[in-house]
Length: 140
Image (cartoon, rainbow, N blue to C red):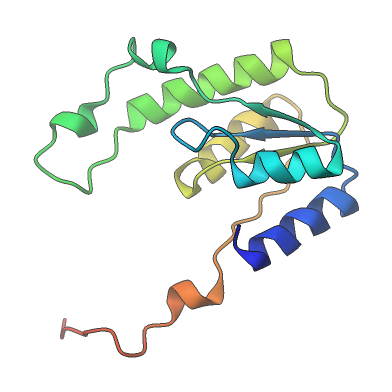
C-alpha cells in the first residue's frame, strides 16, 4: 500500500470512528490492501462491487469502442445503483468508509446524499502523480 494512502485511511477511520469499510474491489487481489488494513484494525470490510456473475448481465459499451478513453456511463450508473441497494439493504453501519475509483466519487456521492446520508468526499491524489518534470511536453 502507498504509505501516504495508508496514513490518510487511518486518519479518516480514526476521525470518523469508521465501523465498516466498503470497497469497489472487483479485480483486486484476494485481499486488497484496504481489506488487509481493515483486518488489522478489526473493522468490518466488504466488497460492494458486483460479482463476476452479476457483471455478465450488464453490457460494457467501452469494450466495443474504438476509443480506449471511452467510459460507459450507463454501466457506471447501473453499478452504482446496485451498490446503493447493497448499502441500504445488506449493510448496517454507523460510520462507513467507501473506497471507489475517481469516476464514481461525485455521482455515487450524489446518490447517497439524495438518500439522506451524510457524505464527505475525499480524493486521494498524491503529489507524485502530478510531478511532470522530465516528462515529454507538447505545444498546444
